[in-house]
Image 1 (tube, rainbow, N blue to C red):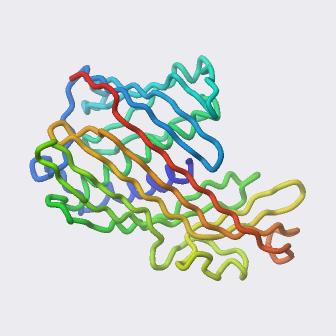
Image 2: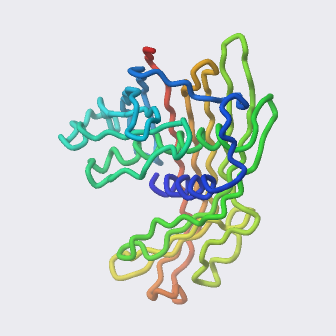
Image 3: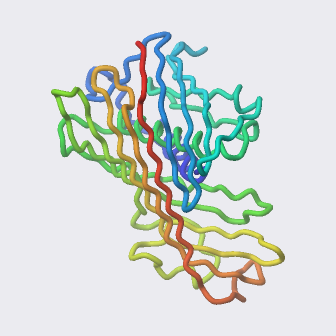
Length: 296
């Protein structure tokens, strides 16, 4: 969750300074057309290995302090593993502004203000917006089959230096306009988060260099755990499918499939040289979001 968000932010930060950005909305197939006071309501469902959640997202469009329109989201009706979860006062009051109007799609939220269970839904929403922002503002997507690769020069880190000693991921974005249905007025996108040919993640131990899943390892993590150190390395991929309304540019539906295939070892030292036998570490996430109501 947080891992993917940080990757998106790093890519977008690199992109915003790139001359490849196209600022002409008239030249783009995809363009968000905001109306002040517009309201959007979504249901998001997620599965993270064996944990499931469902939550309602409600957005109101307003003009921000910099003059750009933003969609300001709130969360409600939170359910985990089939059990309704009351939101804390801070979670009920939390708002996240996102925009597709250019500049930057969002600022990093202070997630310490919300209960832990909401962090996933919040960062999953920002992942969808990060991908759509890149598809909208980078390259030229005009006809079905058009695609471009955004080579992300950044390596993301989610290590906190205390429990997490190393946490890095290296991802490129393969962005593909898969279809246009003029009768329905929608476009469909596939954004594949793929390993670069030469990922720039740190490899702290020799045993971590061997590819785990038929591609260069692009995901690495070292963390403290009860007097030991757990090292893990492998491949992360991430596919996002978006259905966009052409007339207004909002998201109608979105899905993401996130897979981490890794090998992990428990070690006695920070150099990860004295370790136990390897074990498979597989993480699977599936997120779905659909528009249930909109008022323009």
